[in-house]
Image 1 (cartoon, rainbow, N blue to C red):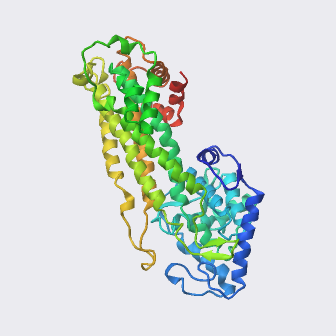
Image 2: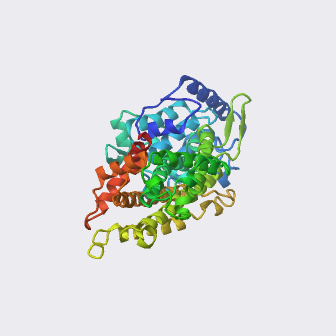
Image 3: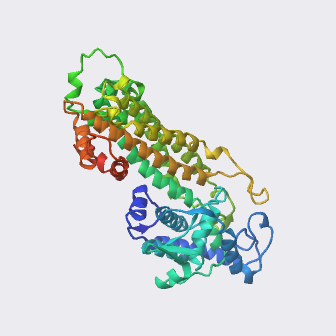
Length: 499
């Protein structure tokens, strides 16, 4: 991929997870050099410019001598690299490398091309700086995490490469890469930004889109297993309240349920209405889809943004301190997605209860054959309930909190990294909850003598390639983990959509 002005979510995923190599375009290189020339003029002139020849934060009024500027940038990185907690997953760090390079390549940061090229060299080599997960308040960007990322560029800290964590200098030498001596403005440009929360949010958005499809599929399977009505999903119904997400979800449900032999067989059964967890799927899942679409719009803007400070304007020679590093747009988006994804798990757990409770389903209790001797999927619902309850705590909005930093210079912060990390946890929990529903729905379909709709039937058969029918109690965890893999990868969803 050629790195230039625009980066899409699909581009991001191909690089971060698919390993597609990235190189800097010539146009981007020219933009970078033009902005760098402005910084060089400031260094040679009398003007005091924040971050170029002054201290940082509360020390913005302290002028730094020209011969100390390189030391200033070095000190910035080593003093800010004080994150704690578990190291971030490699894919999150890869996203940070890509997004930091993308922002700098837009040509308003004043770094040299060598800085961007080293970021891309590490990305392409699969060499990932070790970045602790905790330490960002999401105001001057993700300062501590990005400082750990930048630490590797100057040959300090640690890098994970080839499955091993080793000193950064050692890995750089092995890759024939020279550590940088940072020059004026470069350290600040590397750590003022939103790339931790941006990387987390992008990965979660991609996975949440897949999960929403799996949730639609799980709902369709449960409707068929419980001989539920298809009529609430009719186009005419959702068109009377045409939120885009609801319209699209209802269409997908109809796709999964088409040509069902089950629905006509109970057309005159006398049951008037299904429970909300079945009947209101377009409205509930659709609201989540609307939130995902809004998050996509936010990320599209963020991917094309310059998020450090101060900003260089080569056309006019101006250098302006602003607030583009503030994480609030991403923080609010992460919090909205936390709620939206948690709701997929909430309603899924209720559908699982519908499947397992004999008073509601008309099926054997907990879908067990020889109930009593066998417990069936009784405790699967306990696990789903535990995860849903945990999500309710995690879904509390992080962005409503703020705590002043830097002697009250930075007096409002976004907590965007907190929200994005919580989103990743909620998403993982929701993936497990949906996998539990799918496992139970497949078992319930074993009691249905008629053939389900085409999409549901294809998914049922796909599940049965992974999880055998439950004839007697067994160790279920391997079944659930295997099915979860097919949910997360989108493999099961592809089967149903292609049916």
